Amino acid sequence: MIFWIFIFIFILSIISSIVSITAKDLLYSVLSLSLLSLLTSILFFILNAPDVAITEAAVGAALTTVIFIFGIRRTEREDK
Amino acid sequence: MRESDFNVGKFFAFLFVLILFLFMLSPLFEEGDGAKIDKNLSDIKNRVSYFHSLKSVKEIERILSDNNDFSKYREITDSAKTVIFGESKDLENGTANLVTSIVLDYRGFDTLGELIVLFISILGLTIILSTLSFAKFEEPSFLQITGVKFVTPFMILVGIYIFLHGHLSPGGGFPAGAIIATATLFSLIGCKFNYRVSNLKFIESNAGFFVILLATLGLYFTGSFFGNYLPTGIVGKLYSSSLILIIYSLVGLKVGAELSVGIKTLYNGEKDDDR
Amino acid sequence: MIFIAIIFIFIGVLFSFLGSLGILRMKDTYNRLQTSTKATTLGAFSTIIGVGFLNPSWFFKLILIAFFILITSPIASHSLARASHKTGIKLEENQFDALNNENGEKK
Image (tube, rainbow over all chains, first blue to last red; front, side, top):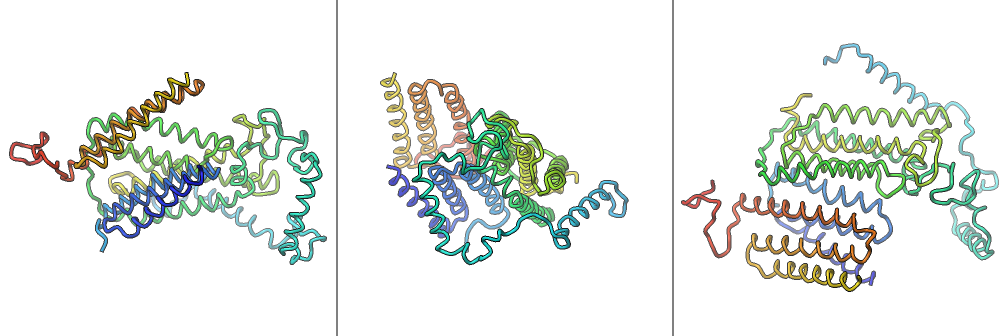
């Protein structure tokens, strides 16, 4: 059971990282990056590392997303 | 404040940095009795080779197979040989969470380096972004204002809980600081709560100063930087770890204040705020 | 006790499934928001109550969690809908917008 949950999260994280690289709209790429760090925090929690999971969820999913969105507001939204 | 003014605080800060610098240079000139390589292990190749690891694995297998009591292999305590949660006293650094005791006690310099890295990055961000002009944000609606006013005290409370219980439960200073910074971000966007950067700077600078001061006092009392010199209590209680509770609280305050300053600078710059 | 808990958890899972089905089926941003927040709030709520029946010593903490979901989920959906209305996303079929003027401009 836990093996298939791992496989599911791996596939989702690979998809979200590919989206975050290839998306033309930078807002989509930032949101998929936040999804990636959320999935990574779930993986850390399953692997018995709750410290790293809390840090990843607080920093990766919340703060860096906000900082990237502030940066996108300052610059252009579309990728060239 | 002009640069040329003589300031007592500046003078003491300079003196403190000078003393730290002398402490750092002192191992160059004197032969301490700190870490020494044992003479039996003088062949350094033997320590890192494959055969040595094989030997140590064999040794552990022998220990495991002999059905010994393991209490004599873990030299943790002085009085009690086994660690019981909620009963045993006077451990090395009475943390119940192993990660915290590694991060703040055995690898204290690592945490100090992380603090310095975060400080330098926020410094560069504020220096670069405080010269730009900034766009206006949307006004929040009534429902957002009430919701954010309800939620943010609980978020700050969760952050304070996490850094106070960093030695008992998972978490610690850095995620607690991130949670506090997220709460201030919510209050900034949601209900236009305009906190002052100068207060945050006061908290941040004093927390960073006291972290280094407490660590240097460890150099005086125990002979090592970040050494524990306060008494430890019962494992599992709040006041069980000696210095880790205080240092983690200061680290959480410092990180939260720093990230809040960075977010405030990203939001509208430091222009319409007192320096 | 376990039977009641299983009934509650089943209701929660059913409503969560219906909410996620609504995201696929609906055409519009606002309709998708409605399905994804209302149905999911009920689903999470009844799942939490079911878990509370399974393990009664957690009941107080679970009520706190449910309270927070009950408060934060409408605010999140409100701000999402407000942002999408401000950026000019229109409805799929019915072009009448009560928040606009008679001429179709934003207030």
